[in-house]
Length: 231
Ligand SMILES: O=C(O)[C@H](CS(=O)(=O)O)OP(=O)(O)O
Ligand SMILES: [Mg+2]
Image (cartoon, rainbow, N blue to C red; front, side, top):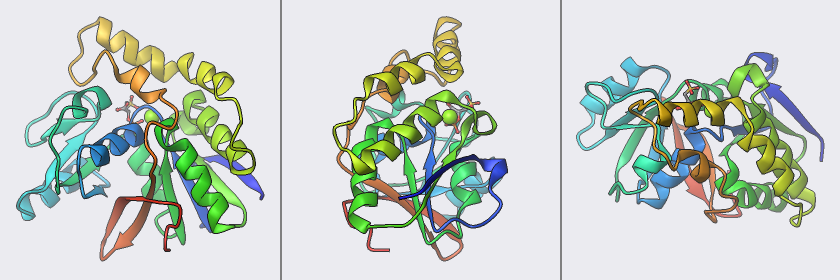
C-alpha cells in the first residue's frame, strides 16, 4: 500500500484516503472526548464559526486551543477533558493545526483523524478496508512536526505489521518541539495546559476505536468508528 506524508500546505490534490495526524493535541483530545461520551465532534474553521455553531444549537459545546476564552466551554487539553462529562454531547472543536488539516481534506472519500491513542485502531481500519494509497497529513509545523510525523510513520508501518515497536516513534514525539512547549507551558503556569497532557498524548492504543470525519450537510463531523468505517 503506497504512502505519502505531506504537510497541510503541500496538499496538491484531493487524496482518496487521508489520515490527518495531530498528536499534540487535537486528536488526542478528540479521542478522550469520545471516551468521555461525546457523540460527535464538529470541526470548525474559525473561532467565530465555533461560537456561532454553539449559539445556534442548544446543548452544543465549543472548545478551542490556547487559554480559556469567553464563550468557549473547554480547551484543547486531554488532561482537562479527561474528567469532563460529555455523554451525548456535540463538541465543536477549533485548533491551530489538527482541525485545519481535517478541513483541508474534507473532500476526500475517507478521512481518518489520528494520534498515538488510536494508532492501532486506525491501522486496523486501513488494513481491513483494503484501501489503496494513503496520504498522511502531518499537521504541525508545516508538515515537519516530529510528533505528528513519527505517529504517521508508526501507523503506516502498523498497517502491514501490527507488532511494530512503538518505542522509537514515542521517543521522537517525546523529544518534539510541541512536547517541550507543553512542558514549558506547565512550568510557566499557562492556562489551557495540564501537567498530564504530554504523557496522555504518548499513550499508544489507549482507545480501541478509530475516528472518521465526513461531511454531514455543511459540517465536517468526526465520529468514532470500528474496523469498518462504512464509508
Ligand atoms: O492545542 C495545541 O496543542 C495546538 C496549539 S499550538 O499549535 O500549540 O499553538 O493545537 P493543535 O491543532 O492541537 O496542534
Ligand atoms: Mg499539534
